[in-house]
Image 1 (tube, rainbow, N blue to C red):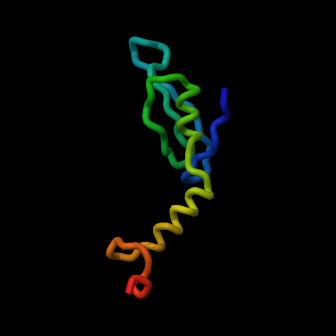
Image 2 (cartoon, rainbow, N blue to C red):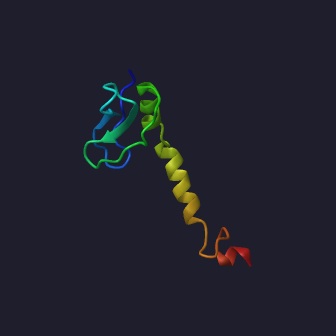
Length: 87
């Protein structure tokens, strides 16, 4: 089985959990939860492997840095660039 990556929010250890009902002793849904900040995926009625992939799929640091740079270039009125550059 694929290894769980650390929590994307706090870096804590992640743990795969299953929901069990009183009628069915085997998990009917799976989710991954951080043991430090308790962030988690939604409960999914799919395979453990699929839930782990969902937890492990996240933007890379490079993609996040690019998004931050794009957000800084917008002015308060929602148009890109500075006011001086538009005139």
